[in-house]
Length: 386
Image (cartoon, rainbow, N blue to C red; front, side):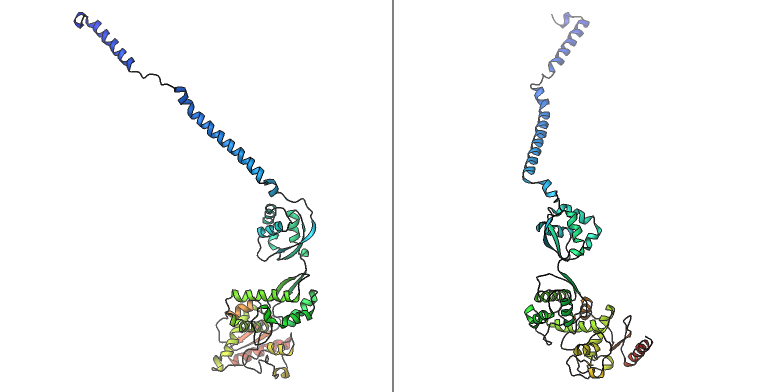
């Protein structure tokens, strides 16, 4: 039978069946292993998480076995035992102090101490020096001990600016157990400390004034070495050539003794230089300094303002009323302000100055003798009324 033997309806039904059969034949066959493919990502995620957990557990076991976290962060129970000296240096931070305390066995770790230090405003006021502490203290007790100046070991001596060697030795002897004779003997060979040989043949003016902590076993030589070491640092910091150290210290010491107010130091230095160079009214001829302070030094006196005719007539090389130029060397211990003035004095044409008020230290400077005479009259009037 062929298509011609079928009716139109039968033919249409037959073709429909053929199309449906063809569509069914084109469907994809079921995939093999479909369940495994869907489960594989889940398995991979589980394996990664398992690895991380295992690795974390192993890391924790290693850290807890090799690093004692609790021990490093803990503190001694205190209150401590046996005394130990601990030095706090100038400029030390809280961490620096903590490291020193750990090294000396005072505290167990730096963490608790640094935390306390950072949260205690007054801790920043801890003074440099050597403190008497105890082994195995709590961080809080150690910090409190450092904030108490009574725990400073040895003797604290404060040398004011403008003191001469004889006064410095007397003060050290009075406040420590080192005799004046020890200082005098130790000062004789001044070049042994590294001080260049100078015209004056002494270390006068070469010892920096300031605060010094002197400990029980220190000697006069130790004190001199310490004071000169600080002065050398000041000279070096200002980039003063070594061959200018003596001149600079001499001028700075004169400024230290001639006026009381630091703002006047520079004017005194400029006046010194102007007199030595003969500026202004000097007309190119060097002038004598005529400083009472140098006459006092020659006479072994201090404290008084005026000098006598006899003292001013002395032939002592430090008598600047008699001799032109600078004295042989410094006449006192200059401080930082006087050193700054000696290095960088202000510009000016001053040749004279006088203190017009001894109480306040007010000083007036003048470029001419006529102006200076007026200032002297003001000083005389003040003296008469006081």
